[in-house]
Image 1 (tube, helix red, strand yellow):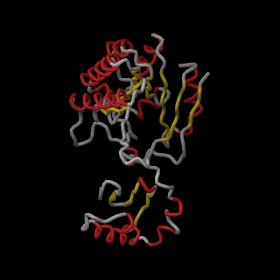
Image 2 (cartoon, one colour):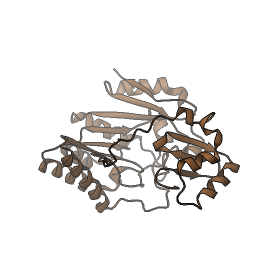
Image 3 (cartoon, rainbow, N blue to C red):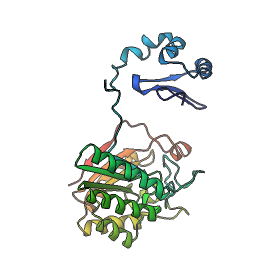
Image 4 (cartoon, rainbow, N blue to C red):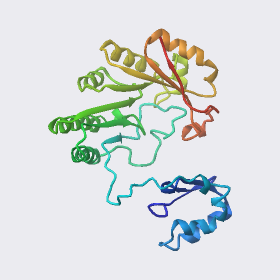
Length: 297
């Protein structure tokens, strides 16, 4: 990052200038990097200084498409979010061959501390009360598998719901999970009235086990399948999420048929593997734009 309003993202293959408040994002070449690095020496430079390096930006690249500044005219207005997405961990039970975050392989502090989760919850509760809003929400996502860091996950849900109730707020909790849950975990999640649950299952057993193996290279299908059935047996609404790779894209009709037979009436989201993380390493991605969604009847 160069400064708060201007970002310089430099990588080996591609480098990008990003100016969100001006609607600018532009890939730059090696020669242009030199000019940007010169700007780094002056901490007081502005967007106008950036334009001097790229005089063509207002014609062929971006400036003609830059929208008017959408910031409020009231300079005192600040961002007060009433929702938060918590990545409780970068660890996971699985080693999916296309994982965008390379969960379980990252050489960073893997688990979120309770103090961080609590601070995020306090922030959105406070903002909701301050703005006199009626509801606030948290979503557990990954990163890794949110329930891996079980103690922080549980504490976060309980604390959030308690704080919301204390302040007379409607609390909404959603969970994205790999489905590698025990019966006790399933019962706990149901008991906390988590309404929105998305479970990842890539299709029939052979597809799931190849694309979403366990840490040791084992099979995950039976556990995830049981988890889905357990939630459904208890009347919990869930959505299924399926990723197709270059090896499974031709089997989409079979995948849809599998979901329709085993989980009638569920919403299923089918999307292509993206060229990042392990998806880049193993070459599992496909060239498909957008999401493929099917409602199975």
